[in-house]
Amino acid sequence: MNELDHILEQGLGAVRAAATTAELSRIESEYLGSKGVLQAQMKLLGALPKEERPAFGSRLNVAKASMTDAMCERRSVLASQETDLQIQAEAIDVTLPGRPIAIGARHPLSSTIRQVKDVFLRLGFDIAEGPEIEEYRYNFEALNYPEDHPAFDEMMTFYLDDTRLLRTQTTAVQGRRLAVHNPPMKVATVGRCFRYEAVDATHHHTFHQVDAFLVAEGISMAHLKGTLKAFAEAMFGEAIRLRFRPDFFPFVEPGVDYSIFWNNRWLELGGAGLIHPNILEANGIDSEQYSGFAFGLGIERIHMVQTGVPDLRLYLENDMRFLGQFA
Image (tube, rainbow, N blue to C red):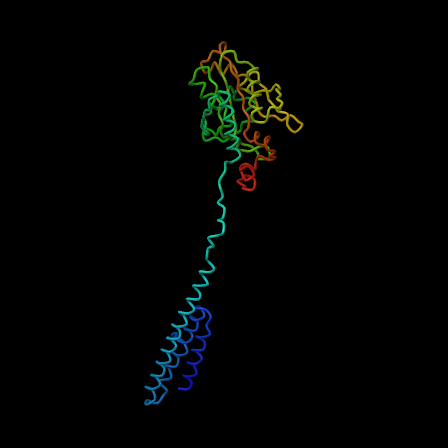
């Protein structure tokens, strides 16, 4: 009996000293569990004289009940305290300003494309769309590319089969429009292109291009240069200087590369020229009556000139530190 009273005194003291419900659960297991201290006292019943067993058993039941009642009372107090602490920790001060919500913004290339389209619309061009998975005949054949011509070396791309490929240039839209529309026509198209390129600061397998062409009676290089000058001034400012130099492109004759004077040097923007008579005739357009011009340039190059971005790979890396500068 004295040992049992000592165990009960220790247990009740441990319950009163418990600081958390987790600690209380440990004490409960230690004293009232199936392998606990009080359960172990039950094994002593068999060793006691027969006449002492009822009194010891009754006292043991009282000890268990006392421990259980003390546990319940202490658990109620501790649970209330822990709830209060949790509420304090999770409390929201409604007087504090809210956390700012990140607002999305257009990608710099998307913004540049909108700007380019706006300029061409003001110049009187229709905006046309074309598929990124293009047919070989529109990407090459309709643009006067001989199959064995060295120009193909610059147009390595990704083929899906013998007749379909990822377009290398938005100029492919020209062939589609010429095949189903009659002059006069004035069309611009902007979209994504693909080439099998080694990726570096100025080359990428995926890039964006704007292409424009005009077919009507009496179109000359003067119309081309005037259009390009108006476009360049709208994109880069009225002080921009433009230069034409002879160059070769299969779909124009004569062909030129056009450059702007930027950062104290001439920077090539793209290729241009008068639409080759072979292309007009192949689409049933009388090249003696009609002529036209065409030109194309990279969207990335436009934005790089406008902002000084040094590496076009940055546009496709989804680095918010870079993209956030243009939000």
